[in-house]
Length: 153
Figure 1 (cartoon, rainbow, N blue to C red):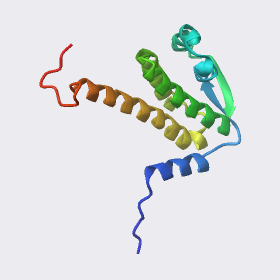
Figure 2: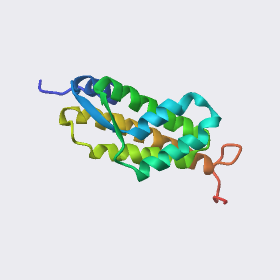
Figure 3: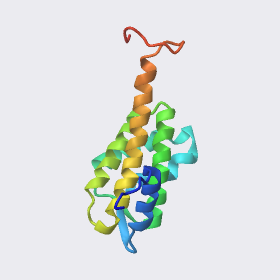
């Protein structure tokens, strides 16, 4: 009776984020805060938002510290912002956001929080991968929804 029961990933993710936390602070690149703060300001902030991403690539030293709950909140908001950018035809921005999030996995300064960090980052990368897959799939369909025989430029 040592048979393990299957736990769906959605349930397991929530348990990991709940159980692997810290009472200290966690360092986060400042681009995450900038993106979340500007997310709701509309098209007028487009140039500033793209510039913030460009700046973060050049200035990786800039960072902010959050407690575990704030970190989870910011990462969730970043996931939403990545999807919003993609849906607004800002695919380069979405790609840069996904790359920056993947870089977060190199942060091992808070080992007790790392399992949660891994779950949060993979959630964002899953979102990006799903968006890319759907775009490629749509490129392979005719307007009637049938498979194209050849992909045209």
